[in-house]
Image (cartoon, rainbow, N blue to C red; front, side):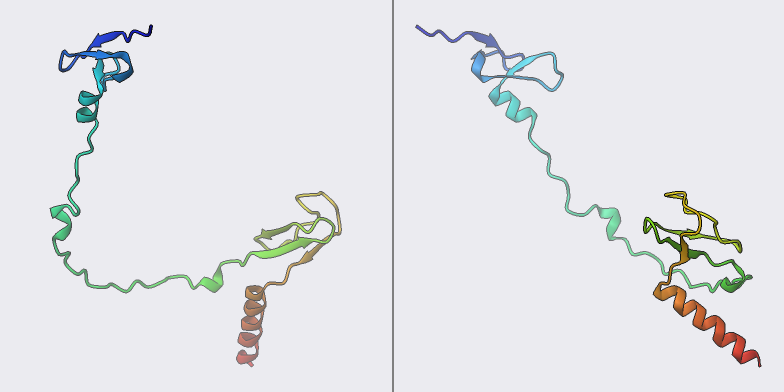
Length: 131
């Protein structure tokens, strides 16, 4: 014959079958399922805190001047290895000698992208406008 052992709830002090016992939030005491549900109810949060409803003062826009035009900075160039198809960016004037991924010499070509083509066209147009 099956007998259900009981334990006293630490919160309400009722004798409760072990099948209805849960660990309390403090992880030390044992409580019944009724007390457990009361202890673990979610508190409803307000939909929007009151401080959000305040209006924000408009800040006047300030134009900032750029001292250095973007064209003065060196452009990064994209290279692609013909052996392993690894693409990477390089800044500066000197092109790399070998692929940083596979280490092969002489397999790098300048990778052509739409942005690099547009930049090249803009450079050429600015050279012709000077004449």
